[in-house]
Figure 1 (tube, rainbow, N blue to C red):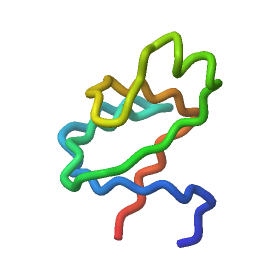
Figure 2: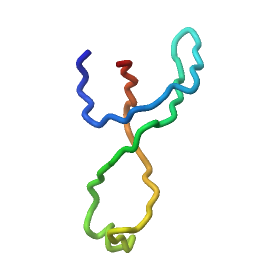
Figure 3: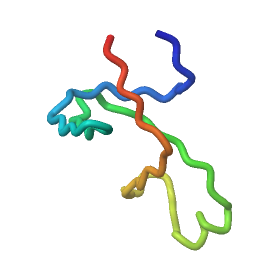
Length: 69
């Protein structure tokens, strides 16, 4: 199966809730993942970010595509 998404995170399906039209799938991430973000330099300064800081990443995405391997 080919798909356009390049960022992949391995996860285990923990629940599926389905009706006639849509299904809600929930996952537990099972492997470590790295992510990147592009923000303005002004934002970095305002947040006072430096290497080694612990931050919370809020992910805003249009789609999460489950692909069974």
